[in-house]
Image (cartoon, rainbow, N blue to C red; front, side, top):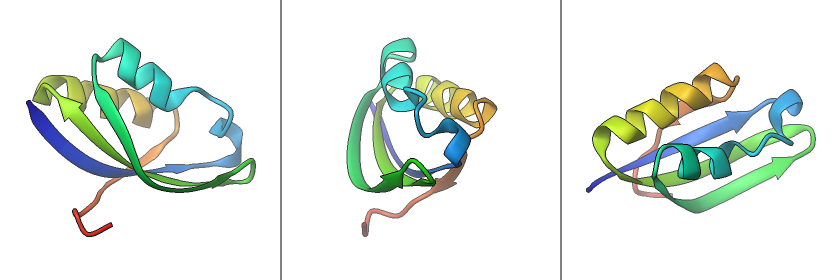
Length: 77
């Protein structure tokens, strides 16, 4: 199983979308929220994904298509 840590940055328009839930269900990924600062005005969530490499990539690609900015994150959060 692969593991990847990323930061999702949300705009106000997508803060009510079930992005993390959908990624875990649709792409068979285990998600762990490591840090977050999110309001209805936007914000970020540091996520740890565990699963197959190709599923992690597909989930990230899907999130980007929904308007989420995705940045790699180090383990020092």
